[in-house]
Structures are given as C-alpha cells and as structure tokens.
Length: 417
Image 1 (cartoon, helix red, strand yellow):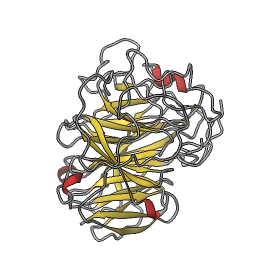
Image 2 (cartoon, rainbow, N blue to C red):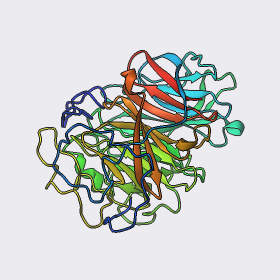
Image 3 (cartoon, rainbow, N blue to C red):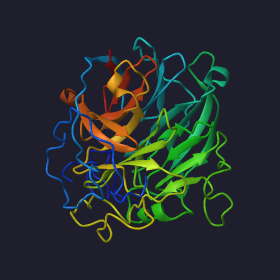
Image 4 (cartoon, rainbow, N blue to C red):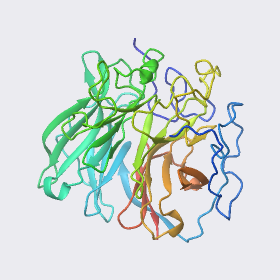
C-alpha cells in the first residue's frame, strides 16, 4: 500500500497529482433570502477559467463579488528566519508559538525575535506533508502553561495524525511531561493529507481535523465511522471523546467523531460572536471548500465534490450534491489551496471585524471573506504582491493579523495599523 507523495500541499505530486495546483454547512437549496452584498461590490477576484463545468448549488457559492478594504493599513515583516513553519498560536502576553515541520517549536517575541528550539517535542515523520503541524495554547495557560500540538507519528502499520500535550517549562526552553493523547486510526503508509488543525471549542475541549491520507485505498474511510480519517474530531485534553459528541455510545462508531466526509482539513476557526466552527478544506483539481461544521453532519467527500481528479476524470460518479450531505458555504475553482485560517475579532480595521481570513498556498495570497448570516458576500485578496505561499494566519490581540509564509527562510507578516 505504499503510495508516492509530494513534499507539501499546493505544488508537489501525491497519488492524485499536484495538491492544490491551479492546473491541476448547511443543506441549502438556494431558496432562502440571502443578505445583500456590500455596497461597494467589485467584480469577482477570480478571473481564471474554472477546471470544471459544474454549476454551484446556490448563487454566491463561488466567485462572489469582490470587496476592497477602505481603511489604510500597513504590511510589515514581523519575524524572519523560520524553516518550513506550519502553525502559530498566541500566548496570553502576545508572543507567538510557532511550529516548524522538521519537529521544532519556537517562541516569537512581541518585537519579532525568534527563540532557539524548545526541546521535548517527540519525534515526527517529516517526510512529504508530514512533520510537526499545528499548535494550540491552553485557555488556562497562565495557570497551567499547557501546550497542545499535532504531528505525523510513526507506528507499526504506517503513519498517523497524532495529538500531544506538554507543559512549557518556567525557563520556556523545554516541554515537560509530554504525553501523546490521541492517534487517528488507522495508520497508513502515506506521507500526505494529515489535515491536522486544532481549535478550542469554548468548553475546554479540542477540535482536531484529519485528512483522508491521499490514497484511493483510504479515501473511502472519510465516509466510514469506524475510522478517524477525513474527520473533524472533538476530544478532551486527555484525548477522550467529549460526552455530548454526536455518536457517543453507538456501537461500531468512534465516539470522538464530530463530523465526517472531509478530504484534507487544514483550517479550523471559531466565529468570535456565534461560537460556530468553520473549516477550510483542500479540494482536488478545483473544489477547495469553506464549511460551517455541524455536529454529526456528512460533508460528502468522496461521494460529492466540486473538483476533478488530476487526470481530469470525475471524482466518483461526478456529482456535486446528494441528499444527506452538506454543501460547502463557499468553494474555489480553480483552487487557492487554503491552509490555516482565523476570524478577525478586533476593530482597528472596522470593515474586517468578524471577517474570515485564510492563508492560500498555491494562491499565494491571504483570502478575506466577508460573511453575513453564514453566507459569503464578498472576497478580497491581500498580500498578492509578496509572491509567497501562505501557510497560516492568526488574529492578534493587538488588532493586527499575522500571516505565516511557507518553506525555507519563511517569515511572519504583520498586517494592521
């Protein structure tokens, strides 16, 4: 079952082709009245031809009108010298924890100084798309100094997405009492589609995303409820299922499953007002998605998709809708390869408040989505002139956004006033 996998999302080949290459939720019947688009709506920001001839399920599901930020803001390089970073999380004092793919975690000061490696991280498999992935700081960090992270873990039957926790030492150069609290089964001989974002649910539990592992062998597992692949999971800080998860107590179903039918979820974010969980999902050739995640819902992969195989063939039977399967709130064709994302909760840039921002890998920009009543009503592209692949974006406590680039000699941009 060994599969050939690329080095990273957005450029390199997997079993299907160049992940994210531009070459390569609620059920919504469209009858409900939708919010009006912003008054200063522009032409859609996407001008390239789509990869498919699929029609959206409702107006505005793709290629929504463009918008443009009116508030004057600045973009500066905040931190430099990072090596293939993947995830970011703020400490309560405004510093940023950053993960690097090779298995290194570092601290970035409020002035942009990058620390040396924090020791204690368990071994990772950094081949292909694997490595040290996302990071989350405990909501009670000031009291317990606990940090959680996801990574690709070697096992007897292959690799798997895993979640670990540890206490940041008082000297802040070591993780103590490290424990792996969760492993997404089954293990598989692939180094792609680990998914692996983390988000707090507001009740002290963790949402964890996984991917389908980029194989025709494992792809169907996204629809199976006895496997943790292609899922959004919800676990306690000890790695157990949460008591009110949708499938707790059902025989033959993993109780940690929260939603299913996902391809490769690399963005999770909680809306700052509603508390809803939103997700970004890498599609194949076309069909990158934004989903509003509901408990127990099926998001369709690989039964339905707005993308194609990299060969140009249809995914499955080539359908985009099916009863009982959720439609994406928004999708892109061609792809932008969305990775990490966050809502802007500040008010320094007023028109950004509660907007969703996403890091785009192959798209090489930061996506801004204006969302009203769970409907995308405007899209903007930021940092398009930087020529960078973006891996993550973080809402800062200072009213700015922090955008993390991908690859060697990566940087963090600060976007704000």
